[in-house]
Length: 383
Image (cartoon, rainbow, N blue to C red; front, side, top):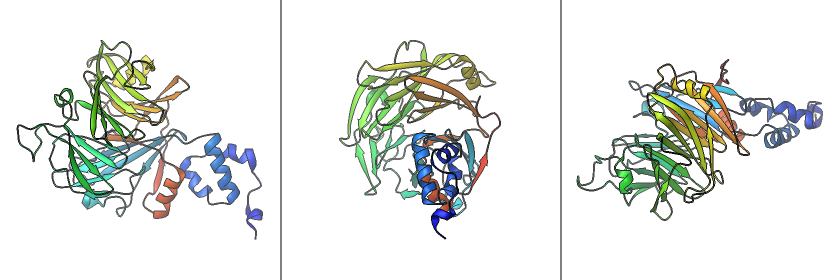
């Protein structure tokens, strides 16, 4: 029987419109129906309901590192999914040797004085094991740009003289080697732990930005030239009342996103977001303020918000209050407008990351049998 006679009679624009309402995970099987369906799915994802970055949330037991729960939110489908991996996938349960960390980027890693493992693919199916950095840091800044993983900061660095400033270290994933580079600028070393520093990577410029959360003072590190630049003003507009801010990069042409808290930890009056087209220049800054009712949701029952966590990818911004843990505020930036929404998470947020998940990524996951996915739809996920 010919492929044409096997195909469903629905086609063209009607099929593309139907596909636009189908969750991405369900398109994996639909993509195998026929060539015309594959073409319709491709056209629908390109023109009607396009792919959007996933927010991936990790919760890991501190007592038993192998007990890991992962949820993902797909804004395109308005759907939560629990990612259930088989024991043979990713890292076998016996190989979890420290807490998973993401630093709010697509990099997921585990780091101990003797071991280092990391994953940079969207669904974290592939893990690489590497020697640990030369100097052990109890609370380092870690991020990835291109094939480089950068580890910096943290006083009390083992493996170097006590009176020396801890150098920045770069791991080249292509050669499997570590290299020492110049230390972070003095302004950053005064707040050298990851608790006090925010980091964002721009892979298109091969540049990493490091910002002091309390002041917004920001420096850049060129991973190719291995040189520091700055300082720059990491905030826009009226920043006198901002006591805390974090940074993120959306990608090519998206500029830097800065989200700040105005007021004080016990009484945050507003949450403001800036997009800096070019941090090295004073112009080209846009500003938005989070609606008051969403700020209240972010505060939670305690009303206490000393800090926030930020994930940025493309036109999507995700903000959560680590003190509360079950509310995420999502913002989509489109043509100068800012559309805010509230997401309720099914578990406390231990760590989170963003990933550009595509249909081939899901197809590979299902074909390998390493990522059975059960859908978790929350009744009030959008508010």
